[in-house]
Length: 149
Image 1: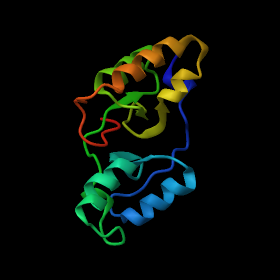
Image 2: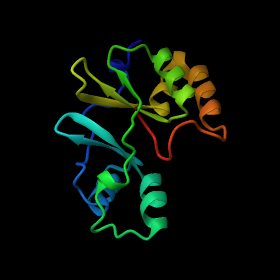
Image 3: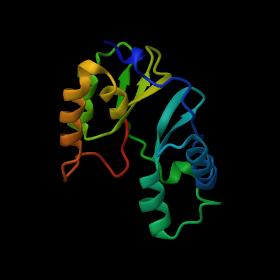
Image 4: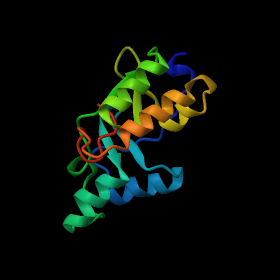
């Protein structure tokens, strides 16, 4: 099964020059903990609620003036829409991430896949459980809030 079959399409994004307040409102409205940061369809990074808490709030930054680009994770892990679900789960396990940005052949954002998306596939429950166990281990190699590369 390919990622295009299980990914969430029409993903809400934010701009690198948006304020943290604006990005947090998107997260609130969409009921999500992360938002891809894009310039058009090109991914520039990922902003997570953890990025906001650790890199902004804990440092006393003003959410009305701090820009997304100042706290986002700019190195992102990504998959492709033609990638196999098992391969993506292994990538998520290796990188210890819970969400994977999905790009097309031109490197444009086309979706996002979460561990939950993988878990809802009948053939993938064991796979998602193994990935979740590995992701939940302390000592993640990923940067704070890194959700995709």
